Amino acid sequence: MFSRIQLIAFTLAAALCGVNAQIQLPADCARNYTVRLGDTCNAISAELDVSTFQLAYVNNATIDAACDNLALGEPLCLGITGQDCDVVRVVEDGDSCAVIVGDAGVELSVLLANNPNVNSECSNIYVGEVLCTAEGVIPYTN
Ligand SMILES: *[C@@H]1O[C@H](CO)[C@@H](O)[C@H](O)[C@H]1NC(C)=O
Ligand SMILES: *[C@@H]1O[C@H](CO)[C@@H](O)[C@H](O)[C@H]1NC(C)=O
Image 1 (cartoon, rainbow, N blue to C red):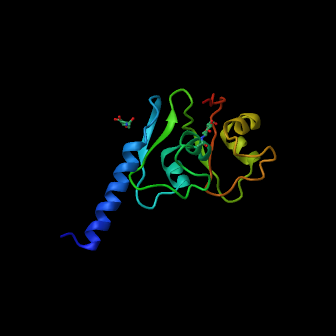
Image 2: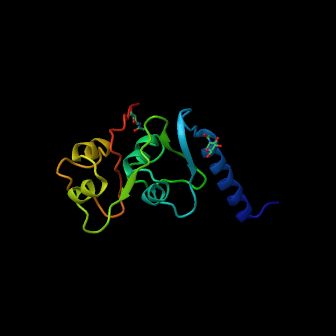
Image 3: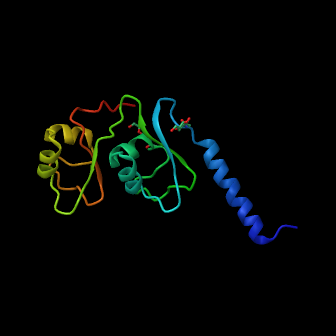
């Protein structure tokens, strides 16, 4: 007979496999990643040069708004081919959009277009957020 712990382990493994089998990465996924223990959305974004917006946008079918439902072993798409911003900046203490656009040499309008999660006053950026600082507008669609 299986012990209680073994049964729990089997159930968890089955649940994880079920999650992984169900999630299909988009066919036009340019970069992918598998969630590891302890990951957060912004940590993944900072490590792999993906904006906070893009990671949420591309994975909006699986990652919830608070990003508190990442599952160990879950595959994520980091960017769609042709709409993949990999030029980013992690917001630091004291940053403002003026500083960020100055450092990156990018127009404020382009920064705002590429980071639709940032409001027009740029008052809602926060330390640890990852912003796309590409010089061109990324054609996000879908
Ligand atoms: C994930 O990316 C790797 C290369 O980095 C590739 O070999 C693999 O096919 C990709 N997986 C999917 C499901 O697209
Ligand atoms: C994901 O984003 C697309 C495009 O904005 C939208 O149509 C879709 O309803 C979203 N899916 C979820 C689960 O929010």
